[in-house]
Image (cartoon, helix red, strand yellow):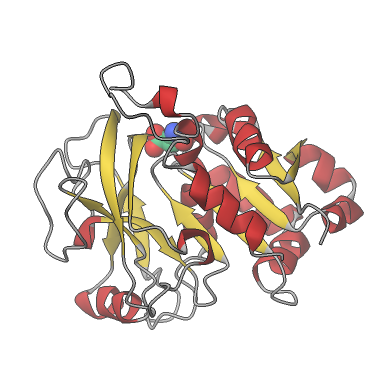
Length: 272
Ligand SMILES: NC(=O)CC[C@H](N)C(=O)O
């Protein structure tokens, strides 16, 4: 299989596209950063890629709500692109990081097929509990409720990650306990904030700062029913090299790579 080609989507206000492209390239993919307007001009462009990634940033200045305007632009002008990657033949992957997860949530693709009343969104991303932008490193645990490997294609074999998070509107809130339960049972609440490197998944909300925003069930990332479409609020592309770790000068034993790289490698290996 040739190296998978990644489309890293850019919009006004995107600011993590270069790091994200670097992460995918380090993992062995070929990557192009493409502006949403170029895709709107040339619909056939999307056929060049196997992975769609919506990176972090402040698309359209977070106006109205973070991710809302880019999601609306995709819905109204690039519905075919979204449909091809999310549904299509099931042979492509979609990743949304931070602002990208906000876009995927606003599009509804991460909570598709979940029972909610007609016209109601099953879940959303609200403002952090303390009402501020929060920028810190967090411990994350993966949920394997979807089976030994877990439900999510990007998280295979990963049990724990230490990654930066940096957002204001990242608190995952489900409409009801029933929605939360349904997502949980299916293993779709696949990435959770946790206390430290040795802690696992907890369903009760853990205290700040371990859970930096107050998210229901400590949710940091959600995948669709197929596990091919994944959104997470923390930034795996900011921990690719061990020197990005805040304590790297104090550690005697240096790991070969940063915790975030495995996620990008999983994406590349999915095509083998
Ligand atoms: N790092 C990011 O992608 C930021 C996401 C978004 N602008 C927020 O503050 O919530």
